[in-house]
Amino acid sequence: MIKRYINDSIYSVDNFFKEDRWLYKIKINDYQLVTIFWNLFLIIIPFVLGLLLYKFWERTGLRSFAHKAVALLIWFVWLLFIPNTAYVMSEIRHLINYCPVNSPFQVCEKNAWMILFFFCYSIIGWVSFVYLLNQMKKLLSEIMGNLISYLFIILIIPLIALGFLLGLINRWNSWEFFIYTEKFIDNTLVYFNDPSHFTNLLIFTIFLYILYFAGNFLFKRRNY
Image (cartoon, rainbow, N blue to C red; front, top):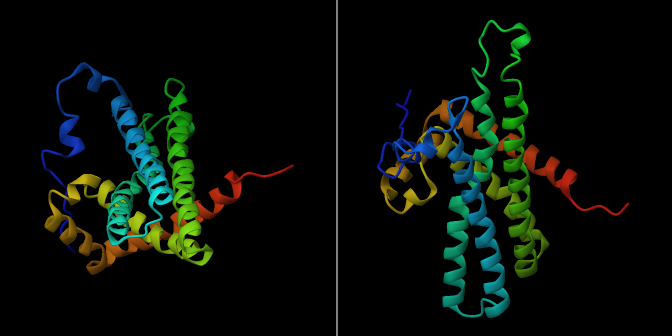
C-alpha cells in the first residue's frame, strides 16, 4: 500500500483557513462558512475562462500558431480548475456527525436543516459540472465539429475525476501545479500505480459519467 500524500504547503486552503479571523470562525457542523464562498469563486473561474476562450476564438479564428498557443494555455488553466465543480459535489460529506450517533433514525431535531443545506450546496456543483462541460463542448463543436466535441466529453471526465481526487484526498489546489509541478505529477502517478487509488479513480469516473449524462438530460432546454 502506497502511503497517502497530504499536501501541507503554505498555499494549501487547509492552512490558509487556519488563520485566526472572525470570518473563519463562522461554522456549520465544523465546516467554515467562508469555504462555501471560496469554492463558488473557484467554480466561476472556469466559467470566465470558457467565455474568454470563446471570445478569443471569435476575434482571432485561431489562425496563427501564437493564437493556438494562447488558446491552449487558456484551456489548460480551465482544465486545472474544472475539477472544483466535482469537488463541491463532495461537500455533502460534511453531514457526517451532524447528529449524535444514538439519535433516533439518524435524525436530530436541532440540526435536521443541515441535510438540505449541504444537499443544495452539493447540487450547485452538479449543475456547474454539467453546464461548464457543455460550455466547452459547444465551443469545440463550433471549432472542430461534433465528433471532436463528443470525444472531448468522453476523455475529459476521467481527468476531472483525477483532479477531484487530488483535491479531495491529497488536498492539492489547482494552481499548485505551477508551484510544485514535480510533486503534483508524482502524486498523480500514484493513482495508476496503486490498486486502491486506481479503484477510487475508476469508480469516481463512472459516477461522473452518470452525473454528466443524467444532468445533461435533466437540465437541457426543452420546448413544451
